[in-house]
Image (cartoon, rainbow, N blue to C red; front, side, top):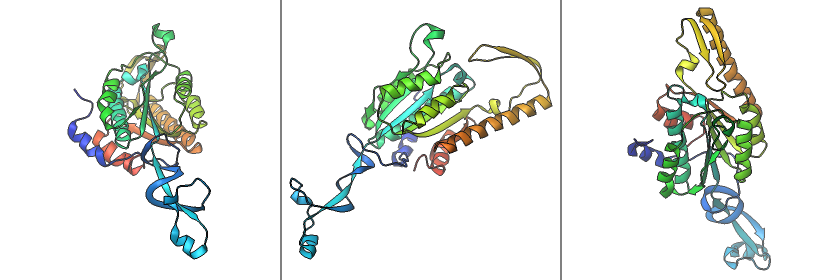
Length: 296
């Protein structure tokens, strides 16, 4: 079954990822760049220097001032868009993984439509826990709508499981993919190491959007009586009695946790979006992400 239906993909054709910073790209694209080039949008003048293109001289300005000036135009180039997907054990809970895959597919597809360079990675099981693999699975960078199917196939090949170190995984990713740009991280943030890992990324000039995804029963657990709960990441267990007071304290802790992430993100210029999988996926992409200026 495809991650996104053809009819939904058609609705994405008019959307673009919002970036707040002008960046120098590698190829012609649809992003405003700090460089000056040859598009139709005028940017500025500068004096002529030997070797400049005569075709860019403004002869009207020469007639008025008897000096040669070049017309400069906004250069439109590609950006490197980074889509990172948390594939740790806790993402197996409820429908988080399926929802996260679809969200990554939609965001990556929009980047490819905009002729941006798409770099994607998943944080898979740690080799220390499973004996094989690595801490981060990096997809070969892609550019252009023609590579959308290849991106979707890569996403569907992933399986969540195990407990990777966010610090090591994101450090390895940044070392392998050196061009900073808009970065969309989809995670439930269940590992304590996420905050320091994201702090490091924010110091490397990435423009980060943090999509914090949780299942409804993680926000409002339907628990009752004496229970033994086991942590899917660490395998540690705790025995509890699920009564009204305990559940109220749990809800308060979750709200405080999300608030802490919001404060952490705001202080670093990170766009923080709490998401629950009970939200309509179409509503999330076409309305919620546009309202919060992740897309336009």
